Each structure stands twice: as structure tokens, then as C-alpha cells.
Length: 240
Ligand SMILES: N[C@@H](CCC(=O)N[C@@H](CS)C(=O)NCC(=O)O)C(=O)O
View 1 (cartoon, protein in one colour):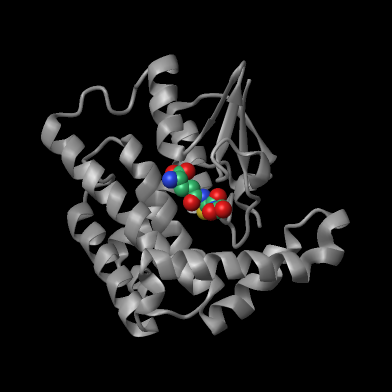
View 2: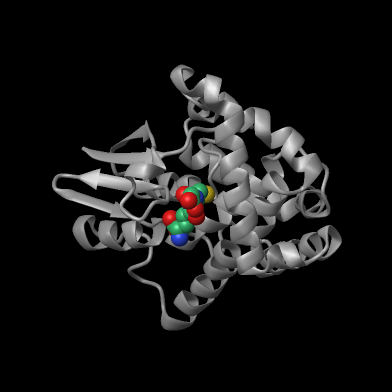
């Protein structure tokens, strides 16, 4: 049995991490059996989550995991895609994972209003024995995220600029999706795991922001998200 090490969920999503949602979405789409256990990033092969354990294999990074699963369990979603479709899917995936992600990270960890919403949720996910240290742990992770976002560059911009960049990313997704059921057409592909994870994460985080307002105002993004959830996630797994 494949074991997925992931962070727990909130706001009706299976995980607070879009990368964990992405991996679980992929597994649901391909119908591979798996179990999820709460991740300890300190034991992760690359210090990040999600990671998987299968037999003797211990592997980090959602995309490397998906490539591994394709090689070892088949590729029912993407096998028939042409090179142009793969290129488009790749570009959208990288935009969301390496661009939009930093907006969410900033919103949750550094933005003062976002932190007021996120901090209690984050601390609520700790196992009981760690809760007395919740304040110190959250503060230490927050300092680390501050350093990461400064190095990566996002936090050098104003809140309005960061939100505008995320909104532009989401507008690109909405335009490319159009009125198709999935990013590349009638059938879901692995790229939809990323699109679903990031659209759902922006929509679910309960803070009024222009990217969230944008997503909730796009009929195609809202319906896409609902369609994906209904088709691939059992309703009970959606409970916060
Ligand atoms: N490229 C990685 C990104 C994973 C990632 O950034 N995970 C975050 C949680 S959303 C994490 O583990 N952060 C802990 C850290 O950076 O120390 C993937 O696709 O899995």
C-alpha cells in the first residue's frame, strides 16, 4: 500500500498544502489505493511535503512522485497527450506551483490579516503533545517563511502587487480553461491535479483578497472546482 505523508486539511480541503492536495487529486484520478498519514517535514526526504513511502521507496516532491507513479503504475491520464498539450500543461503547472504558490504563502504567513486567520488553524493541526509549544513553533516557522519569501522575492512587493500577480495567473487559467470540463479538454489529465489544488486553495482560504474574489466570480473556475471535487473526492474526505 502506498503511504502518502501529507499535512492535514482545513476549510473543506484534504490538506492545507496545495502540493498535498495535488498529489491526492492525482491518486484519486488514477484510482490508485493509498493511505494518508500526517507528515513530519523533518523526516521528509527533501524536508518538504508531501512525500511517499512504497515498499523500499521513499520519495519527495509531488511532481517527482507523479513521474514515479506513472513509471511504476502506468499513465492512464497523460499517455495520449501530444507535445503541444504537454507543453501547455507544463507551463500552467509551473506558473501555479512556482508563482501563484508564493502569493498563498505570503497571504497565510506574512500578511497580518491572513496570519490572524491562518495561525490558529495551523496550530490546531498540531498533535496534542506539541500544542503547548504551538506559539513558539508557529513563530519559528513564520521567521523561516519570511526569509524564504524575501530570498525568493515575493515579499519585496506590496500586498497589492502580490495579489495582482496571483490574479493574473488565475485569469490565465480561467482563459485557458474556457468552457472545457478540464484544462486540456473533455478528459482530466495530471495537470488538472495542480489546477484543482491551487484554484481550490485560493477559493477556500477564508480571507477576502482580490485573487479569491476573482476565482469566486469566474463561473468556469467555480464549476471546474465543484466538478472535480464531486467526481474525484468522496464527500466525507472534504470535511474540515
Ligand atoms: N516542489 C515541491 C514543493 C512542496 C512544498 O513546498 N511543500 C511545503 C508545504 S506546502 C513544505 O513542505 N514546506 C516546508 C519547508 O519549506 O520547509 C512539491 O511539489 O512537492
